[in-house]
Length: 304
Image (cartoon, rainbow, N blue to C red; front, side):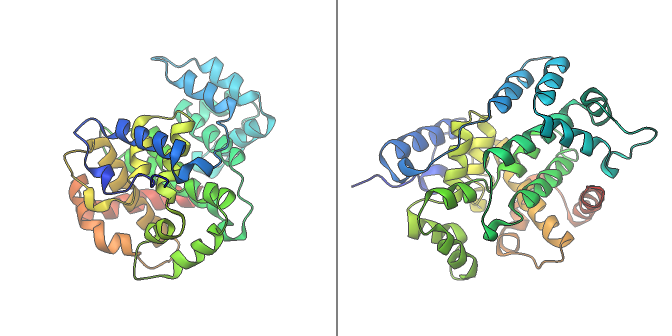
């Protein structure tokens, strides 16, 4: 009998400071002998690995980042398009080189744009059911980075990555698991249990686990791994066994999703209705401050 995928319950029992390591161990075990052994994770793009390495230095080499950006024509074009967009309120002549684009939008934002480009092309989404997947992921990433600028101590770059990768397990499951398209329809229609409960009932794993596996295989930051693995464990917000940065990412992610839905004119979802108080308590914000965040996020959405 195969071992089950690491459960959400077991993922809340680790000692403080050990969360990411426990999640890595659980993922590795399940990949060897459990339901994750048949999940196909696309390899991390070489340029993304180079970019992560460059940005891990105490003082990132701007010239190296520019060379990475210039090594892919389409990625360079994406940087230029971003720099010349209303989001950065360009004045004067448009940027025509990667260096000019990076100067206008800044190193960190340039890296965020490059990361988004590389991830989208590494995990293409061709299903009609996910027609706006990467568009909404990019929008969520913008919301997360905007919120992070309002939260001392939360890196906007990490927050952006969390928004971008949050649901990356969905297209990976769709490409790897027979019948997952039908599961998506069923999970979206059921109101008697959470989305991931239907995923686990049908496939013995879920998109939070598989999303964390992508982060694990691509060797991305540990806080990102833990937060994506636990992003549906809202009931665990504030649990002493989970690192504070993980809680903050999860709570901010719930708010980012809510602000996206409001911007799109959609009704509030069940997660927000059930857990917004815990998220706001963890972040120490009230409704007035949330309103200020919404104004800032909407401004970024409209510019983008």
